[in-house]
Image 1 (cartoon, rainbow, N blue to C red):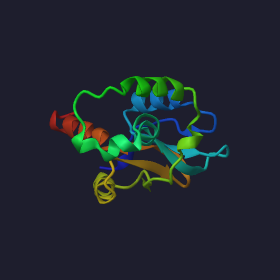
Image 2: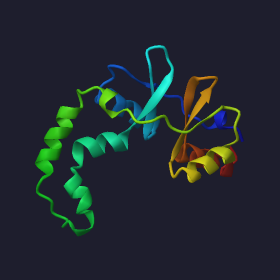
Image 3: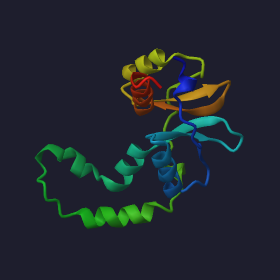
Length: 151
């Protein structure tokens, strides 16, 4: 099975895109991240939900104390206020290095092996420098479930 059969088409993160728009697109496409493209359309990095949430909502002292924290944290008001504040920021502050990618003619098993090797749940589909979509563990599981149902 080729990955173009299981990929999900998404927008890319671009200059000026707000965190709100980014989160809405990731939620719509059920993907944890999007490639960041320059004005000319070249992929120059990626933006992920995990990174945005970590930077805005999860102070380092909470991460460092995660195993000993109680279940009743009282600092949630601060997190809620920061969350409302971050939604209008642009994604430029959250760009990370480019992510794994494969051409659309690659096999699903190769995509899965690369995701496992890099301990990630998604891989971008890029043909000749042009972003086509994303393959996630979830999209692969949906395809396998459909096969099982004879679809």
